[in-house]
Amino acid sequence: MKTYTLWLDDRVREVEDHALWLLLATIFVILTATVFFRYVLGSPLTWTEELLTMLFTWMVFIGASSALSTHQHIRIDMVLRVLPPRYELAASVLAILVCLAVFLVTIYYGLKYVRTTWGDRTPMMDVTFGFYTLALPVTSMCAALHVIRNSLDGGARQALMSTIEAQASEGDVA
Image (cartoon, rainbow, N blue to C red; front, side, top):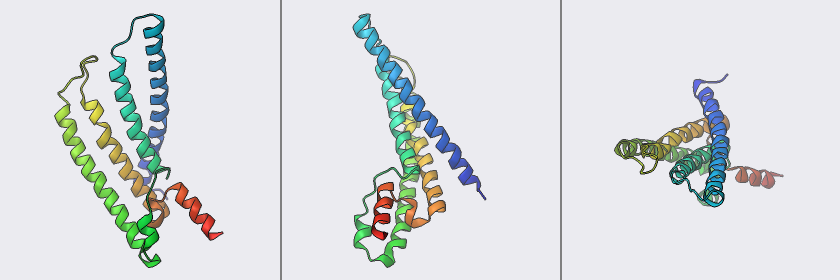
């Protein structure tokens, strides 16, 4: 039986996947047009740098959140390797709590930063800088949701485990 949190996380994952493809395609089209206008037509599009920077910023932050949801992130597990096995669960729970605390702080201060940059405008496109800074709190909310989902699905030990770690631990067992 799925809970609301899991349903919401499924929707967030779908939106992230679609947004990443859309952003990548849009960046490709804009870069191609920029090169064409500059070198073929001799008339550069001056506003594209701002738009590309905004799109790339969103793509990076969404990609980081998406990587966390599918365990494609990097995790340094040196402390877990040094700890005795009986402390593994406690260390995993602590890591989840620290991760969620970092996301909460990032969301809080990210929203404050968005509020301070919302009135500032970009020079070429005349859009708010808030669109740039909004990527941080929005994707931090998504990432926190992914951590909660991963904790519910795989338990505390596997919630923050990367795919590489999971493959390595399967090799150790075999």
